[in-house]
Image 1 (cartoon, rainbow, N blue to C red):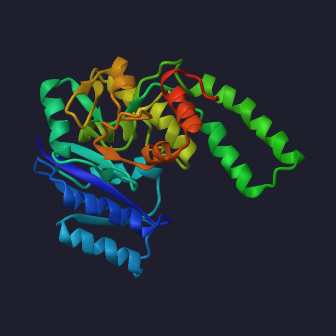
Image 2 (image 1 turned 180 degrees about the vertical axis):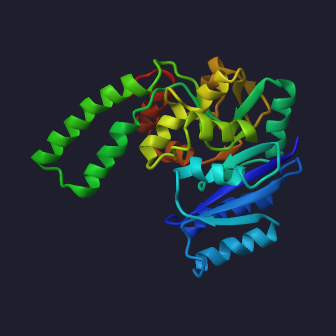
Length: 289
């Protein structure tokens, strides 16, 4: 199996976010030969930040592609996939921090044990999306003070969210692979973007959430093509769809994830009540405490 790891460096985030990834990339052995592609999104080629990323590319013999922010993470992975001859791609977003040695080898072992698995993630969930409400509510809070108009708009969004969940998402449980730190056959991913999505890449995070766990998600496309998907943990254990809740890879006190990301950091830094709410949302379909 030939593999290319694709990492996204996104302008707008602190450069320390990028540094954290490459420090972990250098610290932990992948355990399996691979190439590295860095997708630099929206950086000014003359900026100090881009110079830092370019230096990392040279240090790790990586191919650096500087592109615009087209299609959120899905579009960046698509850009990288078209630039490699490898059979498989391992996709990593900007907030990724590798947590263990043999981090690529763990995906390979899962693939070798279950050849029908063409999508292997380092984390998965069961929930439908509540992202419509969360996404637009955050915009409201940024642009409006909490006055009477804010509360009217907030309630309007709640109603729209109910229709969105009914129209665009499966009934609970809705097992899906989180679209960070996942291994997939390159041709399958390209077909998903070009044939299933008709190159209609997400324009914002809300649309990206739908592509992650909606009715026409990447996970569901893999099933549609006759393959399957699973989660692999840091302990090398492989978890099927009905076992994601005991994998310890997402919204759980048991730290079994191979790669840490923003969502895991949010969970770790949350108070007990917030953690319980996130855990409920992922595994019991109870969204609010």
